[in-house]
Length: 104
Image (cartoon, rainbow, N blue to C red; front, side):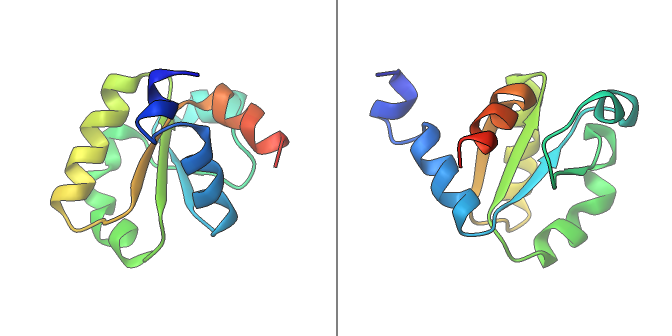
């Protein structure tokens, strides 16, 4: 059992959010996203998050952030929380999330 699972932040929380219709936002560049992505995820590159804040808040759904960098994920999560997104998760590396989606 991982530390994230012990703290309630592991795959179980992500899977539950996905089952409830969470939106997956991939913050990698458009080129990286085009080379591989999680099915039904949307691409908002990290440098475009600020201009998309209103759009993301208005989704009124749980949000899962993924990329290739937990540091970038956490930075985006903090920005979204500061702007009113209530339910947000760090999905980690997009390939990990892609594998998890296949098991749902």
